[in-house]
Length: 307
Image (tube, rainbow, N blue to C red; front, top):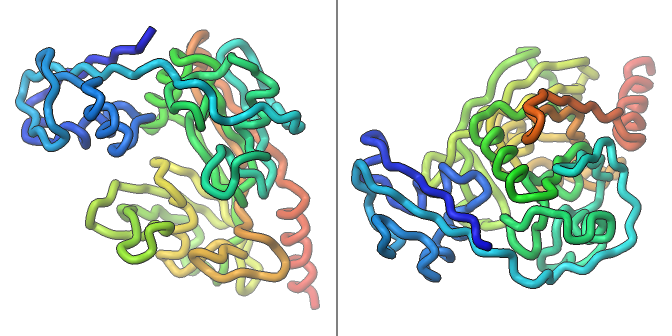
């Protein structure tokens, strides 16, 4: 049976485009996903379908029907998982560096989703469709660390709402390039798609969303720094874009900084995750130890300090 979510339009939302309004109020739906649902007439205003550029009126009642997941395209694979916590609603998984979260062009197997399908069977939320079952939020292929996975749609919606409300704890550690004059601070700069390179994100005021990252330096190593970062928002590549924006790209980041022979991709680890459990209402928090590749780089920087 399809899920139906009803949204009420307040005075402050009057005049907003409906696709933008829905994507901002249902965290797991992108604007393109909303537009796809509108084409199938799964979104109604006052019981009637409207176009994607419909401008909202105060008092409108918007019904969003999320269809049952299509037959699964991703296939189960017996890939070992580092499961930090698991119950009937969710899993917390420690993703290794180099593993893609879900199948996409060029990565059809060997992903976290393939491993989850083998481990969980049919017990994964279907809100994000056939390619991303259970996936509430993502971390990049070359970012290691903690990720939460929903086993049912109710848990998925609860967790996604916490992310939207910024009550979801996500703390990272990174090795960043350059010497930090200010050892703590906040980067408040909107992020959107790069105009010429559509695979990249950038700080921009055009077609962007607000993005806030808090950082503090754990230790300086001359031309590098071990940094702790806390996400207030969760935009694509947020930490990597924000650190590059202030002149401190993540060590090894070959997209927003420069590649390094010591590491494949960026030195970035999702160290801590915290959330309110969707069934018990209890706040839960998990921490992941720094992986070997990260510790190895810190050790080399430490040795360089004493040469």
